[in-house]
Image (cartoon, rainbow over all chains, first blue to last red; front, side):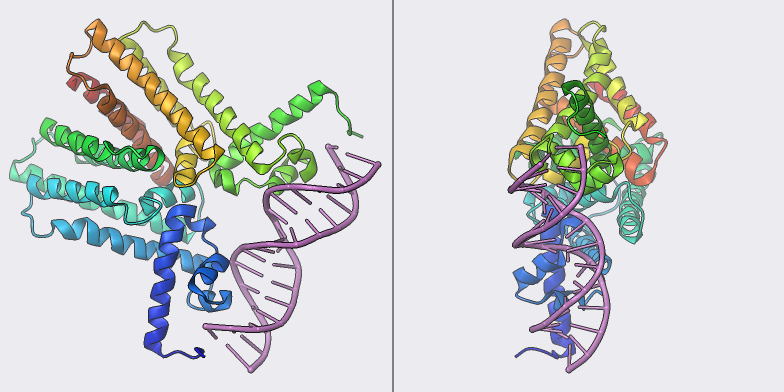
Length: 200
Length: 200
DNA sequence: CCTACCGATCGGTAGG
DNA sequence: CCTACCGATCGGTAGG
């Protein structure tokens, strides 16, 4: 009854596949995400799923893209109206903490999971993940330097060091939430961020 | 030529399997660790490998045990001679940083990788990982409290908060090393630890 | 978007 | 510790 869909319907189907794939991959990883399971859960055939992406790697890249969009909406776009400097940096961190706290995906932060998974491999998927992480680090670094320029942070602040420590706080947050279901973790993260930004 | 080995030979074979399994799992995860590949790399049959552990889950648990032993040798046992208090805590952190810096396993820190992998599942493997992580957190917490008692850290120190932030530093270290091959990361970690222990 | 199929590999078992 | 095998599932293709 539903072969040969219109272009619109096809793109809607593609979106459905990617959304479900993102949820599955956040739990089982991008390698554990299988075309067969995705097809079953969506009530489709494997060929129907695969047709939208060509190969499994194509599917994985589409899922990474979707995760990046979700992160962008939840964190940097939330802080858009906030004026540059320490206020903006704080807003970014707060959005970041609450993004992790909300657990929008069943398996916790997608990027933490797939970064650990693709860490030590080569290929386009790993490159996409590393590239997005680099972009985010650069984004953070820019806001830190802006806060220094404005005078909100001392002139001898080392932006890369601060980026490093902020990332650590968020990695620890995801770790505590996922592995120990520790409900105090978000508050610990906020305290750590506060202490870090005050100390500098 | 080699069926029916002696007990000693059997335990040696088992150790060979676990060691290789640990290296493979640090790269591909505990689920990506397959009996077939392990057998091929060791020049054995699949049944020969599986016989030592019964099931794949048994193999996974044995590998987790081996990783815990490796970590214990590299970190807490290194700090054994150091007197309690801040000195001991600092020694623990330095051993921890250099354990990650050395990259004894091809895939980086085994526990970071498998924690992210088994995060959101159930079962004995997840429980083993979470249990070991809890033990290590408790160990750290004890040394922090000891440093408070001795007067090396202020009386209002929150041990769990400090544990949280130390773990973040080490997670960020592994992340930077594995995803970006960042050679400055160990020095950043050391600086972060120093700042953290001085601030308290 | 489907059915029908491919070779390869998975974890695991029987039997020796 | 081996050979020989099991059903299930993997990613992917042919053809419509």
